[in-house]
Image (tube, rainbow, N blue to C red; front, side, top):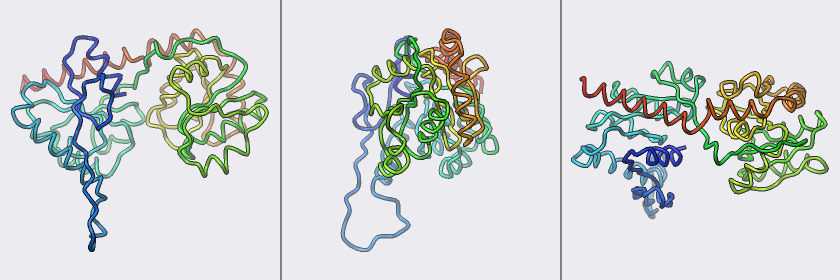
Length: 331
């Protein structure tokens, strides 16, 4: 999301500096934060001390915030924080520019503490109304739906199969997609990195076979082709997704979605682009899968372009940046 946001802002003529972790895309011209893990040393350790990498990240963010709080910060109109670290929020009041933090997750205790310390210096955006509601007891936030690059997720021809894509972990529950597709009588293809080998071996692999295959971890263009050649995308979170990016990607390809109604997913879909099922109800998801396959692909693509695109997201952020600058100038 940060890569797409920065790239589109540059394309629109903005001057953008990206401060990011080592190994970031050199095409962004990112200023790499010096995250060097502290060496482990012999001797007794405080069991309550953070791991060495957390100390290194703390120092990297602290160094950046001190830098931006000095003369280097004068060249920036807005700081947009997309990290999950507490220091950019906790130290916002020390910066000369307004700070906007996008909330990509449900409340995390270390961010909650930072918000309380911030004392109203920061502004916040949430990636869905659901996420904004979860943060509402802690802070107000404007809603800016995440956007997909609709050129990189082009309309596809569709087909007679279902597709599931994402990280293969228990919280994404791809085994529910396999079970629902089997009940619906629809062949299905899974794609994504296996991040939990035990879960894959015990819960996913036994369900593979005729009509249910694993395509592996595909490159973006290959995945877009797979999604675009499917008749339906099945999305099965076992937790409240803050947004639901894979659903937006599928709609951009013209592929309707059958999904569990959890988190931000109901905000991504509309009545003519997908069908929702009660969370965990595989039989209802199977019915939703069959129904979604009959939805109009052109309507799915049009909805993605109009409401879920990268351009729409950056429009909203540009408006937010201008409001923050105007507010600072009027203060």
